[in-house]
Image (cartoon, rainbow, N blue to C red; front, side, top):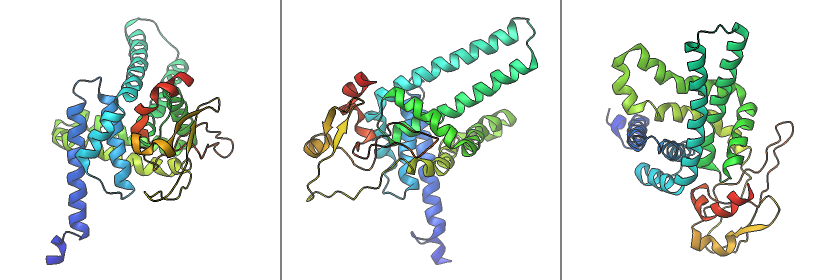
Amino acid sequence: MGKLFDLDSPFMRFLSRLADLMILNILVLILSIPVITIGAALTAMHYVLIKMVRNEETYITKMFFKSFKENFLQSTIEWIIIMAVFGVFAADYFIFVRSGQEFSTVFMIAILAVSVLVMMSIMYVFPLQARFYNTIGKTFKNSVLIMILNFPKSILMFILYMLPVVLLFISSFATPFLIMFGVSVPGLGAVYLYRKVFERFEPEAAQITDDMDFHVEVLDEDGNPVVDAGENAGKTGIDTDTETITDIDISDDPVINNDNIVDADNSNTVDSDADNAD
């Protein structure tokens, strides 16, 4: 019985993980209250969850606010674009319901299918922002391509994200559970579903230590150097555990520039140059 409550026992590790997920969920909800910050909050959540699944040392609050701060600008712009897309969907729904016109069943099904596919693509925007540095345009492009590449699991992810919404409509008794775990638990399930496809675009790199001399050159789309990580790693805090997705060819092996190794969390340090290239 005593072993059950040992700090290293499976039961205690489970309780610790549950507490982490609850703290993370509450952080996301609080930081989403202004609405405009939802994108940055979701990016920070996925940043923490990815580290959690990779069994890396994770300090929930510290890592959450680190990612929230450093990805705030780009995540917020992406969220504004997504809200605009949702606005188009809402306008279409208003026209269908309130116009008084009759639309064919085939047309309605086609619109619904397109809407679901768009939402399934959007599911990958903030995980990509959390894991990889890229321009906004490339992030949206890659989210579509990865959704197609990972289509069966994308369907499962969509179901996971919709479950809390369904539970909320079914019973108000689910509200306390959703406040504690309604975002972080589906997010954790999503990480387990998309992590394998993400790993396909993460070149294996040797661990870099302080006593190693290294030189990594980051190139823009024209092949021009943007940041010299070897000279600037100490100044910018570049972390080489994340890589840049350039273009994905889903009909063949992904085309990855292995030299483009930068940290998504430090995207603001090269934002201006990268955005100009987009």
